Length: 117
Ligand code: 5GP
Image (cartoon, rainbow, N blue to C red):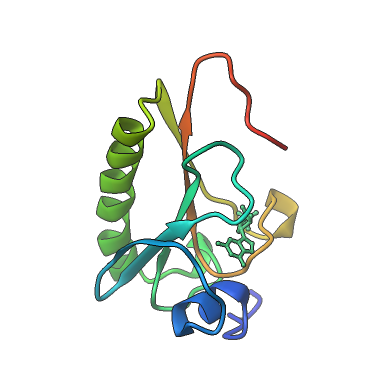
């Protein structure tokens, strides 16, 4: 398994070296707007503890992260009056991962409106 790279973009967002529009933060978790949203309200939820993706994540970290994903999915659905919410997560380049720090996409979805590519 490839090692976690502590210089990835999301690690730099966590350290403040790269700016972000923050939506939620606690001791273990940060949520911020995606810089290239695939639909209005597209946000990302990440753990502060570095892991490359879900495959190498600490289960204790996951147990704290998923309730935040759930809370923000509900908040996004309410705020954007969406018909559904897309929660997605990719592991390794072959599966579409481009930033190698575990993250969950939360995207409000409306009937009949496809995601931007
Ligand atoms: P992945 O394909 O790895 O699941 O998605 C990475 C996501 O990170 C993409 O949706 C992309 O738009 C987002 N992203 C990449 N660089 C930045 C950045 O510097 N700031 C923010 N807020 N999002 C980023």
